[in-house]
Length: 186
Image (cartoon, rainbow, N blue to C red; front, side, top):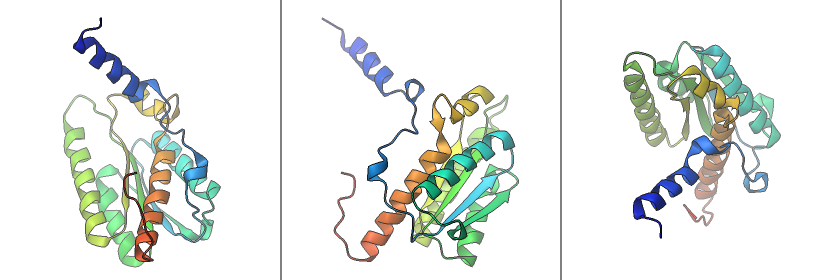
């Protein structure tokens, strides 16, 4: 008989994102983007990675019916600037969701903790204050290889995941605004 600790370890291995491609999803469950507008804010720092995230995001939105004229793209110097740019975008455009893409690699100092926390907090606060979903599509890897693995590599593309999240959240927002019955979380 397996020990409880062994069972927990087995369960954790099954659940670990390192073992699967997180960008795989059931396309039939994704709402159409045809009548929606999206902002995409992309950090320039770690450009090879963030542009791969952007491409995955863009392709996913278009694949699900987004019209190019309804997609507004902004580049900012780094991930720290993502919340401010999202706020500027929302102040000047009507959006159904804003997707923020960046990559902060751990490195030798703890700068990543400060930046990642600030960006996550900023986007959460902005989402709540604006009633517009602001999606956290920021990679927070330990090294460049982990980032590459999540920017179109063996673990999928976080840009795809961020786009799918934006599509679902924009649909939820629209459904609730129209008085539709929605089961949240099921």
